[in-house]
Length: 321
Image (cartoon, rainbow, N blue to C red):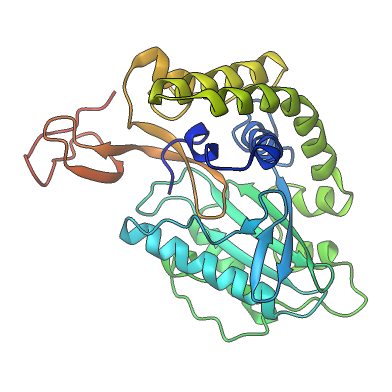
């Protein structure tokens, strides 16, 4: 998982003609998924993907969706396994089928919300992907996934929320059935997500966010092209975040610094993050705080921890913000 949501240094090696569209897409997704005053339905982040041969491609970045998967921790490995399974099922599933990945709240990462990733194969090459936030409990999501698995075309096995996090469920949509009506029947959520997806509303919301993010992305891309230091990248990201807020998109800042560039610049404390990017590119919030390195001995910790945590190297105690 990536501990800073909008890390502008990740764009530095992109070709100039690709950089602005990618930043536009990412900024739009950021303000939707981390939107403070948005409903669950408004925070759905839709994306278009493409199947080419044995790979799933992001058509904006023109690269494999699997290229940036993290394997730094055991938790990363579990989520990465889910992502690989998810995209492998997409490549092999027939047109009209869908694939689910269900990530429950809690767990080692301390996610505050659940996340439903669902992709519909609309043609031989085209995929519609939706990242859907949910406040359903881990137990509720597990029970719903067990029922959903009855409509799977594979023998998927999981026994608890963490096992569910590691896998994906390929779902057969009955011929002639509207997929979103069917999914609402077999996997009802705590929002009107399936209804608004059926009406195309997430795409309208995403286009509005992209309209506002495009001029910001153009300026940010230029700054990244001229950046030479860590501070330059932080400043470019902070400026972009503030400009999106000036356009009316309010980010859900936490009282602890560390994730958003503007927080890092304002507090000068890097590594404590109430949000992060998961393997599907979703913005996820934590009940714990993400610590990259021990503040006393510098040893890599790389996971969310609670107050009272003891560093395994020096024994130092984390006391919170």
